[in-house]
Length: 317
Image (cartoon, rainbow, N blue to C red):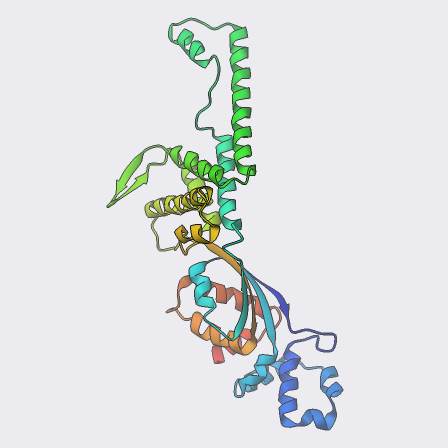
């Protein structure tokens, strides 16, 4: 999950967004009409004065609405984004799940990268004959060993080329096959409660299984490690099924019905300071779900770079 503040209220005349709050107060009290707009635009305020103005502004918070922020938020689940967009006094543009598969493709790329370096089955011409000689106690000649090494090298190159071809094809059926090959390479299955999970043949296999799933999905931190392995498999199987459906002619907007809400998404959010404080008051509570609480914490941290008083406002609002 990443939150970045990409835009905020700023102009040549208002080079500090905090000045907008002061200006709004002065407009309300009629002071701008008395001293003129330029007087307040050009006036310098100390950090202590800004702090005082912001605390006073909480008594009539409409003046806080003139400060507006735009955030880019990525890598959150659709569960989290559905909670976020319930805050209606904001504008949102979310990555389309119909036209974009960026996170799922990242998972497939991770799998292809692993398979390219860890071939499941290599067909090496001459290997069977070589092994028969060894088992019989016969010593292969240097020429035979050289030919075998060359055959192994070529077989590995062919394997890597085949994996790369599947990845670069853009064919949903090939994407599904890559996931299938990868999951099959994780060897045996074992029961876990009333479910069947795979017995991973190496720590490296476990690592890649989880990392590939993490490219596309969010894992709840409460899930124990053994269940996390099973959940990672479930996540990847949903991507496999998604691509299989597309390969069979099902439209993308219908195939996505098999994808869990844990799938990652990205969005652009524009919100004013008053509404941000309202969101923070609700979502920073320990009663809020961990993911959206983390998002809002990052939003507040980003705003702190522009408005140092934000933590005080959150506390006092």
